Image 1 (cartoon, rainbow, N blue to C red):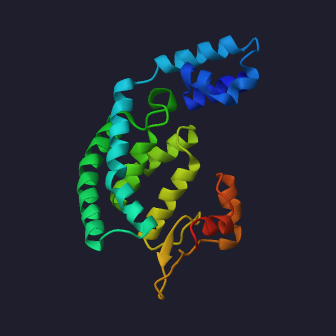
Image 2 (cartoon, rainbow, N blue to C red):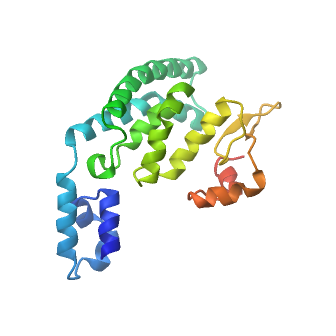
Length: 217
């Protein structure tokens, strides 16, 4: 029971979400279900609805043109000029979006799951799509969020590797790729590659061979 309470608190799960989820069917008839639902109800009351609305909007802006670019790349259908136009428009939108994100991070840090539920990750995505100076400025804040259980370590690994790649350093977790001399994408250089899978496993990433197959490398 103590473990279940901790899971609910970490996830910020609401009572309605628990009731609708089939994952909890096994214990819905148990004597503890009412207690669990009351706890989830309390969690829902603690959510900052105004902040969540902002975070949802930030997430939509972060992916607005990226989703269109991904569609062109995935389906290999679309004008190259249109793709470039989407990149320019997303860059302009990113600049505006980043101002909103920085304002939130500077005012209250990285919101915990109780307050922002699953939407705080949108702050991370916007910073990760920014310049290296901004990433390095807010990296300690994201690292603290990961230590507190409010940000997935796998997400932090992406930023760790991205920063190191931009600085010309070898990556740690093997999340970054680069175009080789033949024009084909390859895994960017890795620090202590012999222990790469050990590091990946520690934060919940699949073995590097499985990852490379997943991204068609």
